[in-house]
Length: 81
Image 1: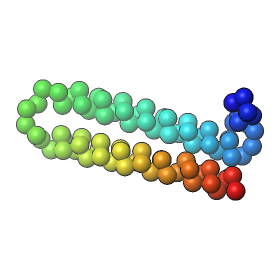
Image 2: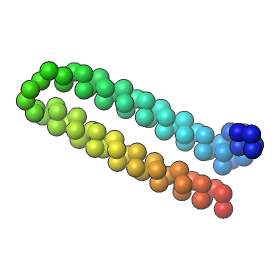
Image 3: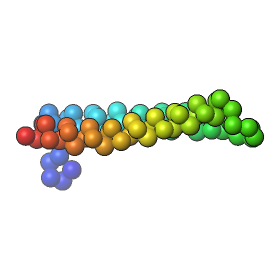
Image 4: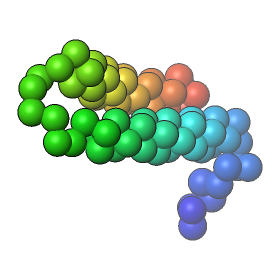
């Protein structure tokens, strides 16, 4: 921030910080839901449909995170050009 990269500096940094905030909110909500779901499944011995659903959610979650790793550089390349 000492180099003037504040949310009000220009449109690029405004959008970058907004996207970062949305991503943080997305991560916190998803991690909380997965933690609650994982706790509710604790103690079950068989691999049930709900455990498969939890695994599917986790795989989807990681795919979304990989997409965010592409979105941020793309925003930089588009807005900084």
